[in-house]
Length: 118
Image (cartoon, rainbow, N blue to C red):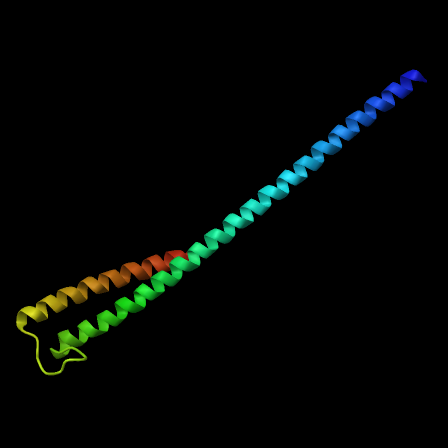
């Protein structure tokens, strides 16, 4: 009977220890999940911020592109119809237009890569 009592005590100690370990493991798992969810939320916010930034940058570049196209093809700015561009200015405007188109393509590519990561 003493031996059974000792075995029972040993069993209870082992059971209590295993129960504590399981409880700690579950708590740690929950903490890791919460941490990962927080990191995911931060990354999602950063992604949305980057997407908004690139969309605004693209809108800005498209607006500048339109003004420069108008200058190149009409020889005037949208706000200034009284003077025409010199040949040198037209070349500069064409270069600037090409640069902006390249930047727009780059921004569109970056925006698409952000959308792909969704």
